[in-house]
Amino acid sequence: MDSAEFAGILSDMVKRGDRFVVATVVATSGSSIAKPGFKEIISESGEIVWGTLGGACPESVIIDESLSVLRKGEPKTIRIHLEKTEAAVQALLRKEENEIYVETFCGGQIEVFLEPYLPRERMIIVAQGGRDDIEDSLVALGKKIGMEVVVFDHAPQLREQPDRLISGLSGELEQFQTSDRDYIVVLTKGERDIQTLKDLSGKKFRYIGLLASRKRVQYDFERLRSLGVGEDFLKRIHAPIGENIGAVTPEEIAVSIIAQIIRVRRAPVKEERMEESPKTSGAC
Image (tube, rainbow, N blue to C red; front, side, top):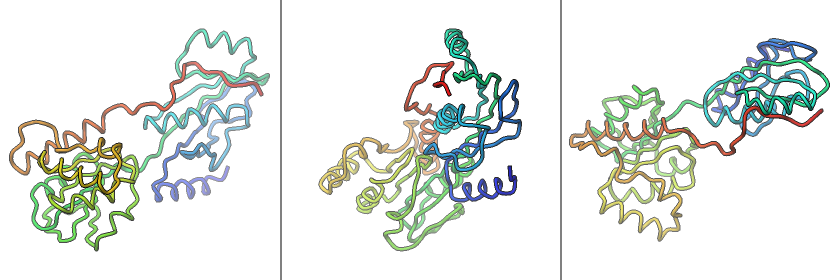
């Protein structure tokens, strides 16, 4: 395998913010074609972008496990057993965790480490312009919890510098690419709420919150419904924003928002498909 080519592809995918898994063979036994050090890069669509682990037999289960690792965001090691049908069925009854059985005449085992690569989590703040102590505090706190902080502010007066400041004309937010690792905080505080939320309604995100009074939230939502914004989006908006900790000062309000973001961030991600362990794959 060409390690320079692997490094180049890996670097390009990280720069683009792609979601993918690197699968590495760490140990083998028996007659497996795979050797320690063999690698694959598997995209979030289940495509093998680069490399091989030694043949078609275990590929489908490695792809399935890689997609599960991407959803959970945590690395793990799996052991693939290349077994005859009877042995695979017996293994299923034992229910050994992270043990996968492929029905084949090859024999042997492959131990594979699956490492997810995910874009850095971002806090995206859409601000009102001008001096805002909540905005400043959020920039500082967002960095402290390890997020990349992006601020949309047409007239910024920030003491804290975000990782990225976008201060152009309207329309930039609508064109901005987001993902399900983004946490969006809307601080527009008035009529700009409507266009901002409308621009965000078709985007991916893990969290979105709106700083507004209950009366303002009701008004904004009625306007958005009249503009054709769907209920699925409106139900996802945390409004009024923040955990109920009795916050009063701008700094306390920022802490309550960060607390809510952390709660969502640490909540378990639901699996799209529940699978039993151990698993078996069709014969090859």
